[in-house]
Length: 491
Ligand code: C2O
Ligand code: CU
Ligand code: CU
Image 1 (tube, rainbow, N blue to C red):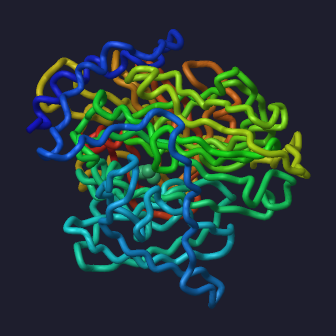
Image 2: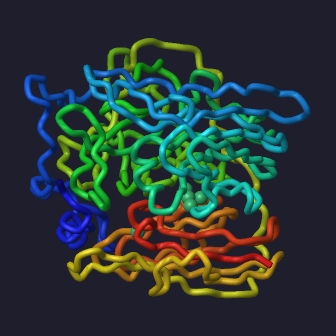
């Protein structure tokens, strides 16, 4: 069996090799994937399960969670966290950990200003913690790493939804287990809409499609293989839980709510013909104005709200959404999904030139510097650090005055390893990236920001809602599990 020790020693130095460097795009790797350890053989006598050729399975829509009650001015949900078997690769039943049996994770549709209460029952053999990523919630409802609930117990989380509409998500956060739990399926979409969003003539209903992208690794019996820091082994790309699927669309505009739910994979997406995509939102909701681009980058946990207008393609066109970043070969990880334009449809939707007005930033009174790093000297058992320290749940690393605004300059000092930076509770603004103004994709409220080796970002955050202790961490979940996490306390 591959131990964490043996795998880690070889991977760190190569981690950044297929990724963007500060210098520019590096093409997908073609040789490194050979380093992945061989999968376990299928039980004798059975035919090994293989990843099908791309675009042979249909992309499912994410199932919508139904409330058990909408009384009392709130929506109440009851979710069972359970292990089930689902078809991911054709012909195989893969054991996955799920919210209510759904893989891909379901979508919960919430409205700003209307409370959501979810009771989760844990039927697994491990403790879990459910975190609403991007949510403005009290510390007791945040689902922190140590605030777990045991097997055969339940826990109720209350989400006031006192924040703007945004594509949020919830996922497991039980410390040292979050990485494996999320990999095995404990992740779900939480679409919060507000009046502004709903008043805009954007594509809606069946033309608004949540898509969760991630990578995975399977053995020859079709079971998920989790190995800590498995940078090179996770070479199957899943869109809504299926490998490089196709999705039938009408020749009109669609709004795609993209989420990168991978543990560690960065995606750089483009349409195969280089055609335009219009990005209208990011982690914390709509941008002030849309912009047109030919590529969308998503580090783990980042979201993008993107419109594609298929009316420019004749019916019968098949257009591939590609990923141009490794690790992995273009054959393995380069083909994310294919849009098949199969019919025409009326399109009353429009993309307004102005989407919303963001509040002015308050003057910041405190500046902090945060350094992300991990051992990359080839040692066994590398550790991840925030400011040179491994996470200690009892240590308060930053104390913030309630009501204040601050500027945090966050730097990845590694030479090879990419990271990103996520804060609980707040949506921040990206003021600068590497000393230059942030680009349009980072011009709206964000809760997660990518940091390729050597990169630095300057963030502005206002801490005027809850008091208490929350975490900030690298959202490459294998890294946060290695200690790249810290506590901040608002008082
Ligand atoms: Cu997705 Cu601690 O977060
Ligand atoms: Cu979070
Ligand atoms: Cu990291």
